[in-house]
Amino acid sequence: MPSRTRRLSQYLYFVCAFTIASYALSYYWHSDNPFNLRYHQLNALGIYSHFIGAGFALLFGAVQMFTYPGSSWHRRLGYAYCLAVILGAIGGYYLSFHSHLGMVTGLGFFIVNSLWVSFLYLAIRCVLDGDLRAHRRWMLRSMALTSAGISLRILLPLLGIFFSFDTSYLIVSWLSWIPNLVVMEIYFYVSSAGFVTKPVTHISSTKGI
Image (cartoon, rainbow, N blue to C red):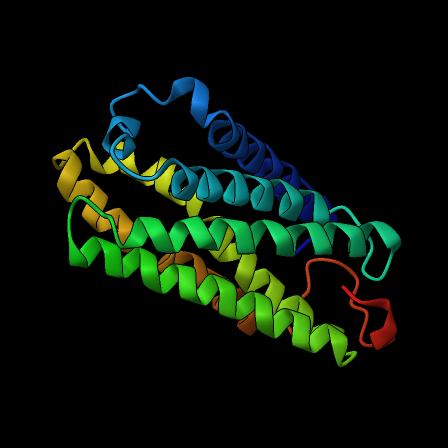
């Protein structure tokens, strides 16, 4: 991908991530809209942990695109991203068991949540082993799932043109993340190294993420 095109796509992604993250982090102030009214009877801690964790994970992941692998800022944002994903996943598991549409929707969110945590774990293992190439691939897969928050809020109103809210939400519980992973795997396939920036093939395991 040409440098200018890649940089433009990064800026576009950052804008989308910042917009959705701002929505998630300001959940308290707009919690009376029709979408969020469905959450009012659930545990507030479970809701806020997901919105806050996933919101910050989007922000940290988007900013990470502009850091150099192995730099101090890259590692610090990596630590912050890990903590945000863990926090978001705790709330995500809670919400997956309390979907108002039942098992089909809940299962979709449960699976993406499990993959989200698993990919992060594999990324951490790889970087501790000094394998930055594998680390970056797993982190990109993790970010593809973090970006489900963007996909969901784009697809839900589009599907709402043709279907009821409940039907749209059922579809988007799967469609918000499966295509993201498919696109990422296609990107890995067509790219010899699978990197969005100049690849670094090895770092010391003592440096951390």
